[in-house]
Amino acid sequence: MIDSPSTPLSPGELQGLLDTLVKEAPRCFGEGRVASYIPALAEVEPDQFGIAICHADGHVQYAGDAETPFSIQSISKVHALVLAMQRLTPEEIWTRVGREPSGQAFNSIVQLEVENGIPRNPFINAGALMVTDMLTSRLVMPQHTLREQVRRLAADPTIDFDERVARSEMDHKARNAALAYLMQAYGNIQSDVELVLDTYFHNCALSMNCIQLARSFAFLANRGTNPNDGTQVFSEIQTRQMNALLLTCGLYDAAGDFAWRVGLPGKSGVGGGIVAILPRRMSICVWSPRLDSYGNSIAGRHALEGLVSGLRFTPMG
Ligand code: GLU
Image 1 (cartoon, protein in one colour):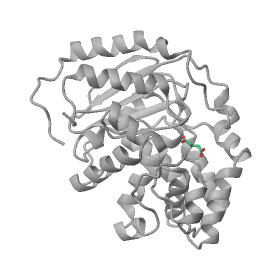
Image 2 (image 1 turned 180 degrees about the horizontal axis):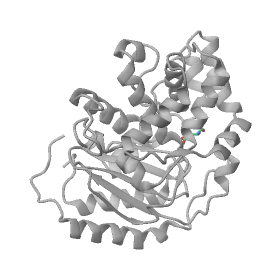
Image 3 (image 1 turned 120 degrees about the vertical axis):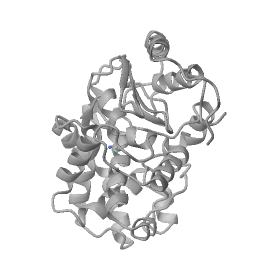
């Protein structure tokens, strides 16, 4: 990925762009619907939109409902993988989960059976459950450690779980439980399956706003160093690897379309959030709860397209 020589926007111009995106977002409010298969998520007011960017130096700009907390859901799969990549060897991780796009729905069970219980990548549910198992089999208090990890990345000790959402997911766990028990049947899950599920649901139920999420991803736009506290989270190689995985696998079975339209590494969640990385420049978080049929935020994706067009430089050209 090569930076184009165009001049980046000034902070004032960028703020103007963010404000414009907020004004344009209501055009998408008629489309899509909020996730309802997790009942606690169905109660969210659908017509909201927020956007925040965290520059590689840690400076934040935002607009709209950027301070409203929402359920981060699958975006947490990235935080969990970061923890795994920090604590386990590459062999320990990548022999148990793949690195290829799945082309299947995020919660599909079909591929898992055909491929002997090895999930395609860590960003579909089966893969995230596998990563969660890697962590639960090594950590004494896995939920606590995952929450601390996110707090550290965002440099914000107030971030916490929404216990109602976690309970709601546990009460409607059938599909995720089926994935986890199938992997156990293949001998690929090492810890207690119910503990893995509870840890995974809590991680998905972290409640954060756009500003906190953008901050927690800023190290991926800063060669692995967290600009919020100066700590080295990842090596430069790990940073490149994570961004590559986000580009190819981060948006479920719409990853190709997202790369076509936006051209940035990204991760979405069924809470309506999408995080994207402009390497060496900024991390971005957009949030709007109405989802398309793939489970991705409609207004969020539109806003990212608008942002990339307005920025005058992107990694893809
Ligand atoms: N907790 C959700 C699930 O397991 C996450 C889905 C998502 O955001 O893609 O179904």
